[in-house]
Image (cartoon, rainbow, N blue to C red; front, side, top):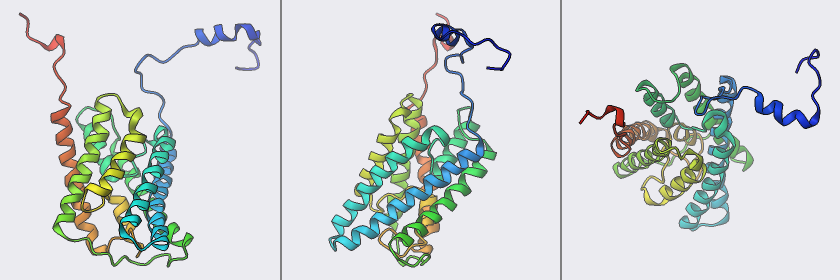
Length: 263
C-alpha cells in the first residue's frame, strides 16, 4: 500500500484480499533467489554430513558393538535428514546431492520441471563444499583432527553394487513422488528410505557424491578412503541413470483422450 491510498476499514479487509489478483491454479510461484538456494544447499549438505559423521563418532565412543554403532548412526541420519528436507525443501528443493540435481537437470532437458545449467553449476559446488565443511565441523565438535584422510577402504565390488542399488532406489523414490504429485511426503519418505538402505545395502547407502567426498575428510566411523571415492561416485551416477530409467518405465504417462485415434 502506498501513502496515497486510502486506509480501508478492517471489515473490508477480506473483500480487498479476495479481489486482489491471484495466481492461476498450477502456476509456477516466484522462485527463491539463486544465492538463497545455493546457501540452502550448502548449509543442508553441511548439516547432513555433520549428522552422519558426528553420530558415527558419538556411537563409537558409547559402544564397541558395531551393530549398535550402525543403528545409532542410521537413526540420527533418518531424523536429521527428514528435518533438513522439511526445512529447506521450500527454498532449494533440498537436493543436498549432485546425483539428484543432475537427474533433475536431465528431466528438465527432456521437457520436465527442473534446474537449469546455470543452477546446476551453482548447486553442485555448494553441495560439495558444504559436505566437506560438515565433516570438518563434526571432527571439530568431537575433538578429532579437523582434516584427516580416512583409511576406511570401501573398494570391494559388492559395495559398489550396493551404491548402484541405493542411488537407483533414491532417484526412483524422489522422481516417482514427483510424477505422482506426492512430493509433500518427501521428508518422511526419503529419510525412511535412507534409513532402510543403511541396512539392506552392503555399502550402508552413501547414495550421494557430495557426501562421499565429504566423508573422505574424516578418519572416523563414517569415513571412506580417498582412493575409494572415484569408484563410489561413478557407481552413484550409474545408479542415478538406472533410477531415471525405472521412473520412465514404471511411471510412464499414458496418452490423453485427445491424443487417442478417432473411432
